[in-house]
Image (cartoon, rainbow, N blue to C red; front, top):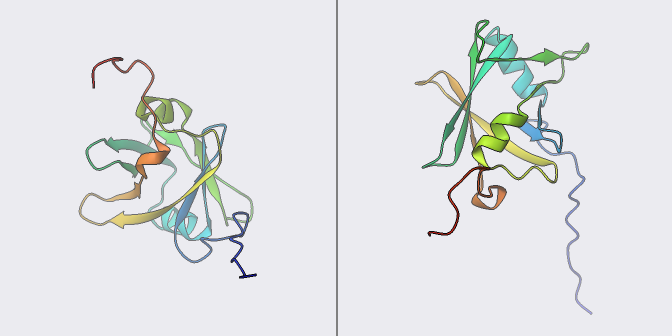
Length: 132
């Protein structure tokens, strides 16, 4: 009998690279590397952007703004997060399971970018039905 490699989905990955976990409740949980980058940008608030053509989420550090999400940092400063439930519903993100996505910094636009795999998206609520 041939061996098959077991891939541990519960393994802790993303300790070195900036990453975000998106929970079932719509919370964006940033790992330590991303938290450190947000701190270096003095991010107390972030604006969320969506590029539907390239399936990319943009997280841009911001000042206080009524459109912004407040970032909460934990006491040990090794994690941070915010709730983006309405944003996730708007883009049709399937957060029925926790998802971990890696983050890159776009120097030109001054924002963190997350590539969203097509299989993580469903039709946004209110999207036209039938044609297609």
